[in-house]
Amino acid sequence: MNRTTGNSPFSQPDEHGHFGRFGGVFVSETLIAALSELTDAWRAARDDETFWAAFQHEMAHYVGRPSPIYHARNWSQQLGGAQIYLKREDLNHTGSHKVNNCIGQALLARRMGKTRIIAETGAGQHGVATASVAARYGLPCVVYMGAEDVRRQASNVYRMKLLGAEVRAVESGSRTLKDALNEAMRDWVTNIADTFYIIGTVAGPHPYPQMVRDFQSIIGHECREQMVKLAGRQPDEIIACVGGGSNAIGIFHPYLDEANVRLTGVEAAGKGLHTPFHAAALGCGRAGVLHGNRTMLLQDANGQIMEAHSVSAGLDYPGVGPEHAWLQETGRVQYVAASDDEALAAFHALTRAEGILPALESSHALAHAARIAPTLPKDAIVLVNLSGRGDKDMHTVAEYGGLQL
Image (cartoon, rainbow, N blue to C red; front, side):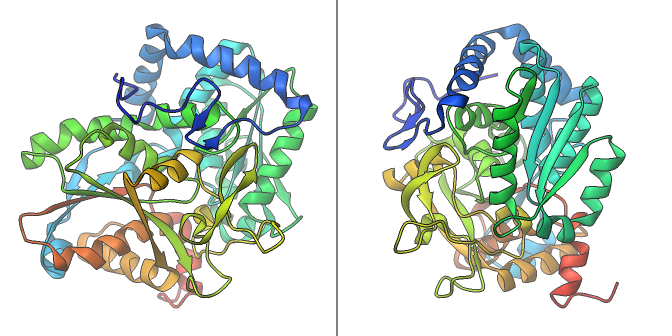
């Protein structure tokens, strides 16, 4: 599997984990030894073909990869203009792209001799994937989840508990993903000797942004082969939602050197970028340090981290992965935003047109596809990363005016 872009301008990060001025390691002294151990183990595994052979075996026989690409003909016809294709990460075991990274990190944990797994989760999909993988390898698992997200994602909480994981609700702060990540890091500091922390996105201190990206890049590598077979060529534009940004970087990274392929990340505009109720760190944020890395963050005038808002629990985060911040600064990827209302409209539109229930996170990417498709010629190709399925979001959709449950 081709895991990097070789000697291209996009061969990042450097040996210290920097993507331009973003990334790096900003943690307390108590975590430096653990991160050094992890970095050494990751470098050795990254160059070990037997490690990647084990990863690919699990992708095929446990996850069910490759995930297919689907031509959404009905929806494309309704919208007019471009042909929309969907990368069906929702069909993976556990229902999203998250399991790709969880398998990779769990294999690394076993390689390092770690005997306990912890994770944080927002929408619950990373928590479910981590709990599933922990059960697969017989490892005890603790998942931290904001109390507000526990309420919004009750079905995923139940799934995690069925799988044997302990779910710890976090009552501090905004009671969402940011606070869950804080508590998970506190746990890791306390239990470094036996615990492996599976971070769910391309954020955090080095080597996490690079490591998670390399595991998730299987998405884009599959697309490069599948699009040629299905459509005869690569897409004109690829669209993915961006919270922390792992599904987006997973599909974008193998295409960074393809200058003719436009790459678009879609943040959560929430109730509007003109309000305080959104999660658009790239669109409205400033550079700062959070959770061990320098990136773009939602901050007030005093540099305090602001609360984020999105109808989707998985995009409800005040920052973004450092590689996304760097790709925005270089201009290689454009970042836009879609509101709660736009995401919900796209959710309903795809459901009715194609019989596919997308996750509310993925619905933000679908909303931008619906926005641009009518402006493009009918032979244009737009590929959307359908990063997860929407079963988990039924109660949220109902709360926002969907059908009565």
